Amino acid sequence: MNKHFRRKALFLLIIPIFILSACDEPGDVGMELLPSGDLISVGNRIQKDNIRAYTFIDDSVRTDEPSRSLLGSFRDPVFGTTTIDLAFQLRLASFPDFKPGVVADSIKFFFYYYTVYGDTSTVQKLKFYELTEYIDPDAKFYDDHDLSQYASSVPLAEFNFKPRVALDSVYKDTLYQLAAVTLDNSLAQKLISADSLDMVNNDAFLNYFKGLYIRPEVVSQGGAIVTLDMIPTSSFSGSALVLYYTNPGDTVSKTNAYFITDFSSRVSSFKHDYSQTAFYQNLNKETTLDSLIYIQSTGGLQSKIYIPGLENWRDSTKIAINKAELVFHVDTTASDFRKYPLPTQLLLTYINKDGVETLPRDHAFYPLYYGGFLRPDYTYRFNITQHLQGIITKETGKDTYINDNNGFYLTPYYKNEEMRRAVLKGSTSNKGITFTVTYSKLMQ
Image 1 (cartoon, rainbow, N blue to C red):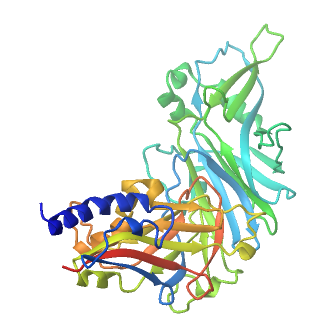
Image 2: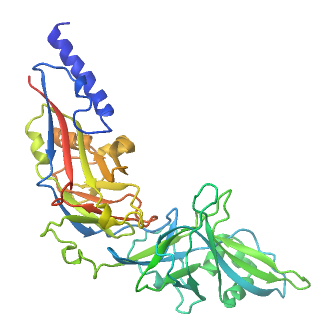
Image 3: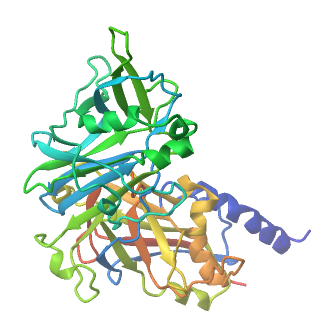
């Protein structure tokens, strides 16, 4: 094997190793592994000044069957007002032990919450309604859906709710909090009046009792969004509707519980009012660059990012991308992150030739490699090496991967089950958005 052939073989072996080993930091990491001499040229290109970023509303977020449900109204000093309501089904745990002449004593809804985002000193008013229309668990629901159309106009309860946070005295971890709401006894009477055929199975029961709808009143100041844990597990009872009743001849009241399960419809709607915010006049516009961009979950805000010139890398097919990293910096002052926790992870998608948001191939390759996690230095970093390499090679496939560089969207990773927001430094800010490409170019 001649020397020239051996060096080419070494280069082909080292490139994939380098790509995997260069996931932590951009720049010169791993460059000492590349062969020296005139076979290749190693470069590092940093792009910053011509990157453009704008704030847009993040619409069309699905809200059905999240792992956790959100509820409440919150007036954020930076992001305006967010109000979230909730509709859900309750299912039979077993056939009730109702005897002829049974008396309904009372009925309560118990819900557990774990996380409070906002002001815990504000008392909120929650109104509870019975659903009058069936909500299909297989249907798709989006953030702007009007859930009140499925509910009665007569409330079953008006509950003054002041969320609280308690910490475990030993581990200092947040404890689950339990709230109990007494509902109008007309619902208890309806449940004990159900015919046996209405309770023969859950399909029949859901046709008889379709569930509950909770709507918070919009707050004028303060407020909070709470995260509800609705579904029971082997070690956690979950939220439930509990009927208290007394059978004839009994002296002690009995209970019958109706639970929310994985098979229950759980749907939220998210409403945002940005009219009083500092960024409102530039919202959904690509005419003015701002020094700040705004990211918010719950169908809130996203940033649209343009990196000019990505397609120009196609000019040379002899380039191998070692690492392409896009970095966003949190404005810690504007975010007030100690009071309002930041998203633990952001999601970067590219806009394909059909205008559809698509995940870069780097995400499917390995999520940790792709990145987007909040770092100790308050940055979010994305590795889009394979995405850029695909642009260079004009790679295509069943997903029509080829991309005309129509831009990217940046959003919170958990859009419908976590209340989070962040203010990031924009393209005109000092230490704003940075795109660093480390590459190797074959000289022969």
